[in-house]
Length: 212
Image (cartoon, rainbow, N blue to C red):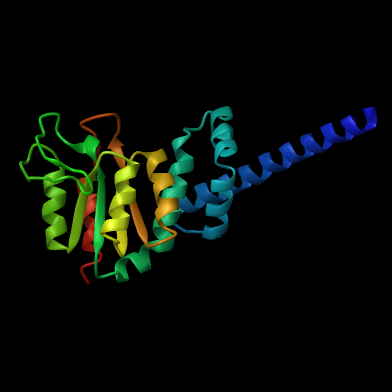
């Protein structure tokens, strides 16, 4: 029995070392692809980083690297992999924005299915995005949470989706939604619970590239 426990302990150590080395290798490949804008083994990187998401974050903490780099890699590689299909989708394209982008003074009505209905009052950046969406044939949804995203996917059934969120939420949402349609994601540049910000020009450029 003592031998069995000793063998089990060794196997555990070997497994932990293997996970560490594989995750570190995938992180390096992903970081290279992210920094150089040259994607190497994209599907392998996506699979492995989602599989070892927590160990990858732990490795970043150990080496004093910002944890968000893991999410940045996943988001940018997913964007690159799905870009062509996203651009070719011409009908029922959706932009999903978090309700935290709204102005604290926003008085927009919240529909129980579609989320907040922007009135283009101009108190936040959502109005600019809605105006661009009208121009490029996208429909904007401002949602209070993940449950609304599921409602929108079911009721509107978009052919492609452009999402805006914080790093962690965007990583999770893109993984889930990409199983059903091409996606693109843009991270918030100021996150939090309210009055968050996104690079509006980047969001609009994502829509504009479909207008070809």
